[in-house]
Image 1: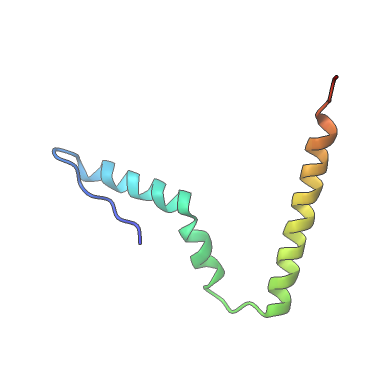
Image 2: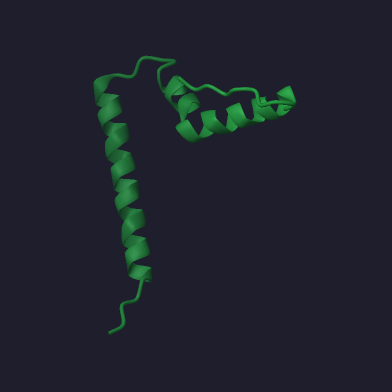
Length: 70
């Protein structure tokens, strides 16, 4: 659970801004959107596989750019 305590003499707008940043960093909205609708186990597995392939391709691109000199 995310909490933001209002500091002494702090405007509410600033506290709300800090809360929004915390929510964004924690990925709360992403999780809520995922749970908004039922996702079949097969769809979940395919989504995870697609993300893994995309991440692996990205890592290969980054590795190919890196040059190793001895």
